Amino acid sequence: MRIVLVGPPGAGKGTQAAYLAKNLAIPHISTGDLFRANISQGTPLGQKAQEYMRAGQLVPDEVTIGMAKDRMDQADAAGGFLLDGFPRNLAQAEALDAILKADGLKLDGVLDLEVPEDEVVKRIAGRRMCRKDSSHIFHVIYNPPKTEGVCDACGGELYQREDDSEETVRRRLEVYHSETEPIIDYYKAQGLVVTISALGKVAEVTERAMAALEREDA
Image (cartoon, rainbow, N blue to C red; front, top):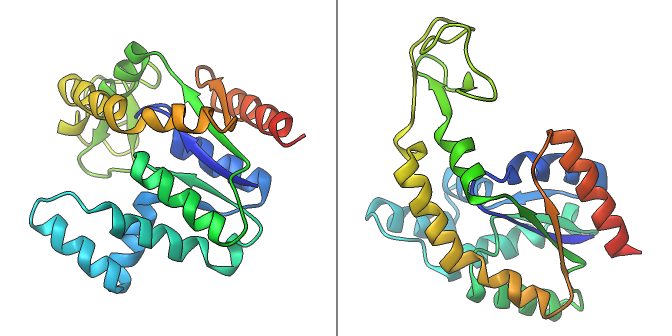
């Protein structure tokens, strides 16, 4: 299966992508991983991306598209893949269609994780990170520490990242609505979109997603 995963920040795309890719036995291709791999390996595309990032500029679509194409051309993606974070806008969606069409392929489905905006804000703005070890993550509502502001694991100070402030989250949502949400209508016109609720426990959402994709594939 060739699947695109979409949804607002805080929808749990990364978590669901990992589980779904494992269940479907296809590689999980995330934009973040693509950038990190290309930059760390010093590929021509990675060097280009780094130049823009160092200048504080957005990486152009053609660089992101090039990285995604290179990854989709690898042997482990021959039988399918799950794209997470790409395409991010209409230009990238159209480029993806063209890439697949050139190889006589097409997408099998687009899984849209739906989460109310207030829930997104609650999920992200409630996160607290440990200053000593960033892998220790808590949440003021869903996973509170035993002592407020103190990491259960190592006693480090818990803090809210600047990216997780309510103001920043709402700005990220605005970008999602203006840039990424239009690709849902683009794919709906192709009859590819399956929308599921991303509320509930991780395993419940995964189950829901697998059922929806199986129906789509039937």
